Image (tube, rainbow, N blue to C red):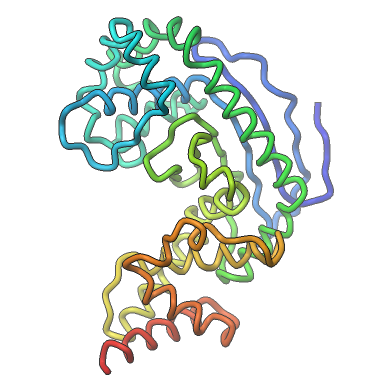
Length: 324
């Protein structure tokens, strides 16, 4: 069954179980005009991936090791985990090799996630697979109902926002970042836990946490922020930032990300209204150590029409301030 919207932005909603796929929600597909200002986004809620990432974060939460970017469990999940510690023990043991790993940057974890979301790759760790299968009945009985309520509501909210604003948002991001969207669709999986920050994206796949309050209140913006982490837009953004830094004798490895947050935030405000507060402002991200860079970006943005000119002007302003 297919439903066609007028906006050149696709949404496909599906839910899948771990061993055999659960019945998927009816896919809603937009007939895309394949141009550089349109982007197709497929939004999924995978039960497999939800269990996998919950298991990873739960194992990390139980470890007494010094772990980077530990993502706390909710109070309810932490209490349930303590109650069902015996059932979870094999999962905790199986995830020991991955406690210091990141699901995006560790090859095995990346392949596990790909396998669980339909990728044509083998699941690389049989011990993790077996432990999760053994824990599945406990997870389904006690953890999954609340997890699915959260992910389903986030998915529905994001679906609604993309259907209403997606076309305008796609074009606004292109305008602000002077980039081009990929031709192929981007898959978003909404899960209970993604990372401590709230999301991660590889070349074509985004994972977003439904339990991250700041992502829930900035769902549309952050979906497009994550989409801008894919090529060709991502490479274009990084190239422009690197050129501007080199031309002005500066080093700042996150400059490209400041430009991305600022540009996508402006795009969201232009689409959602002047009362909308972009993510970097609402979370205080642009008021911390990177404040001078965000201030410089904001000071020059409206004076230029391309990201290249904006980046060079912001970098020149930073260089001038450092020299004075």
